[in-house]
Structure formats: structure tokens, C-alpha cells
Image (cartoon, rainbow, N blue to C red):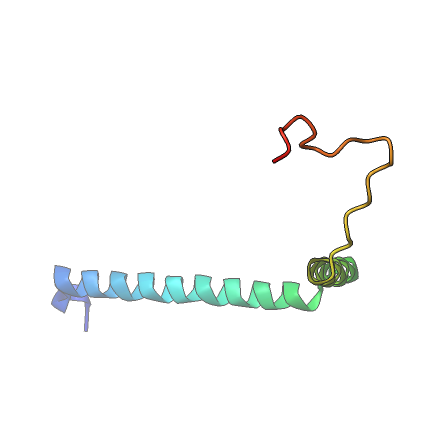
Length: 86
């Protein structure tokens, strides 16, 4: 049994199988790398995310309960003082 029976089409099929196997290997390596990196997550990142979440909640609370505008000092004129009163 030798290599005499193989045609160019067989060689192409084997090459395509090798490319597909290599592609799956790359995807598997990427998945394993992401999984390993997720396990070694930095605690500072978690603290930052919690801080951002607290700031967002504070912003929402400020939007729901806005502070009244400060009253103008007594020496200031109203903004439309120059208009004719009608």
C-alpha cells in the first residue's frame, strides 16, 4: 500500500481537514485562555465596578430628587428687568 492511489482531490481534502482542525485548535486555545484570565480577575476591577455602580445609583437619585435652585441674593434684579411690564 503506497501513496500511489491518492489523487490531488484527496490531498486537497486532507489539507482542508488539517485547516479545520487547526481552526478548532485556535478557538479552543482562545476559550481556555479567556477562562484562565477570568479566574485571575483583579480585585481592583471589582472595586471599580462597585464604585461606578454606586455613582450611577447616586446620579439616578439626584435626577429623581433634584435640589431646588438657590434663591438669588436680594441685590440682583430679575432676569427680564429690561422688558416693558404689561
